[in-house]
Length: 155
Length: 328
Image (spheres, rainbow over the protein chains, first blue to last red):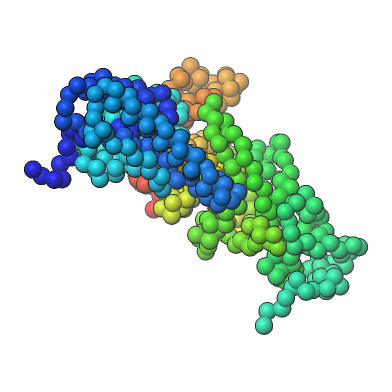
C-alpha cells in the first residue's frame, strides 16, 4: 500500500466550540455508528494569538490556557457522544493544537496529511457573503484546496 | 562619545529650542518628561526625552479621516527633534480595544504599539512606507518616532487633476494607477513578512510634496483575523482602487441627485459588497474604463463570486490592466 495515500477510514473531524462543529460530529456518529474499521481523529486548532493583542505575556498565556482547557472539554464531550454510539476507545483520538496559523484551513489540512486522514469533516457556519469577503471562510478554503482526500461539509 | 541628553540642563534645552524655533517659543517653565504613560499630561511646550534625545512637543495630531469630524489624537504628538531640528511625529502608547463594525460585521480591533514598531523595522528604508523607529521611554512604553511627511493624502491630491472625469482618466489616471500598483506591491511585501497593515484606507496614504511618491502610514491597528489574515487589507485596497478610478466615490445618491440616466442601469450587483451605496461597476458610469480594470473592480461588487485572497492575485490582474492603460 502506498503510504502517501491517506486512509479514507481515518476520519479527521475539525471542531471548535460552535454548533455547526457539533453537527459535524453528530453526523459522523449517526453515519458510522456500528461500523468497524474507522478511526476518528477529533482536532481543535487554536490559532496562536499575536502578542499584539495582549498587554503582557502573562495575559497571553492565560488566554491560551483557557482556550485549551475549553477545547479539551469540548473534545471530551464529543468523544463521549461517539463512545455511546459504539466507537471503541482505540478508535477515537483527540488533539488540541495551538499553532501559528495564517489560515485555519491550511492548518487543518496540514494535520489531515500528517495524520494520514482520507476524509475531513467540518461544519459550515453559513457566514454571509460579506463576512466571507472580508475574513474568508474555513470550509470554503478547505473545499477549494484539499487534495487527496474527501471533504464532508456539514450544515 | 555620545552626550547623555537626559543630563541636559533646562538652560541647555531652552537654548536648543531658541536655536530651532526662536527665543519667543521658549516656554517659561520647562517641563521635561521621560515617562509618557499618562499621555494627557504630555502637553504643548514640554520636552520629552526618549533614547537620550530631547523632543519639543508642539501639538496633538488629528485623525483626518474625512476632513470633517477631525478628532484630536492625544497620544500622537507633532514635535521637534531638538538635536537636528527635524519635525517628528511621536506616537505614545495607547492600548485601545474596540469593536469595529464594517457593513454590519463586528470584529475585535486593537491598537498595538508593538505591531507598529515591528513594521517600522521591517520597512526601514522602503520608499512606500512612513519611516521611523521605536524607543522605550523610562517606563518601558514603546514609543514610535516617525519622520513627518510633508504632503497630502493621495485621495486629496487626485482631486486637482482633470477638467472632468474623462480628462482625469485618460491623462492623469495612468500615472496614478502606476503609483497605486507600487503601493499594492508594498503591501505584498508586508504580507510576505507575515504582517498586515490593518487599516488600509485612502487617508492612510500620503503623497510627498517633494518627491511625488506615496507612502503608507499608521500601522498600529490590528484585529483578530479569521480564515484569511489579509482579507481586510485586500478590502481596503479594493476600496482605494475604486476611489482612484472614479476620481472619488460614485454613490447612487450622487447619481440620483445629478439626475443621471445611468442610475436606471445600476443594479444591486453593481455596488460595493460592503458599502451598498457606492458604485463599483464604474464602466456603467464611465464607459471608457477598460474591461481589464473594471473586472478588477467587480471583485469588490455584490455580484462577485470569487474574491481576491492575496495581493499576488490582485497584482496579477493589475499588471494586465496596466498594459491596457498603456503604462510602461
